[in-house]
Amino acid sequence: MSRTAFLILVAVALGHAQQKGSALQEAIVAQERSELDSLKSGDLAAFASFVAEDAVFVDASGSASKADVVKNVANFRLHEYAMSDIRFVPLSADEGLIVYRIAESGTSHGKEFTLNVNVSALWVKRAAKWVCVFSQETTAK
Image 1: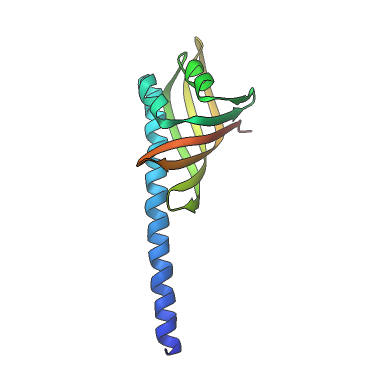
Image 2: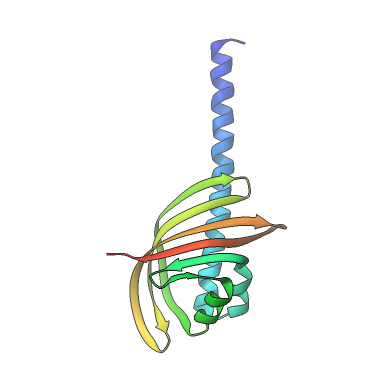
């Protein structure tokens, strides 16, 4: 095989891998947005369906199970949100980590809030369904 043919094969393979990564990123970001939209609409059943049974969520209060998180969001409603600075790390064909900043406003336990938060979320495709298995939120300075 000539050097030129080899370089063309490498370029095609890299382009194909980038397209797959891009499609994976788009799928996972869409899932994260759908999960956030369920918090905006107040659809707790939909929110719960996005969270894996064995999920772990972490924030300033510590770690929480799916049951804890679903219980806490019963008194939480997003009014508006905007995701920015989205970064993506593909882990496999069916797993990916997104990291982003969210500007959000809403109501939590009867109190209005406006926050900027740094979020990381690990999404995995299980039995042909995307679920979040880990999320961490840190209030941005």
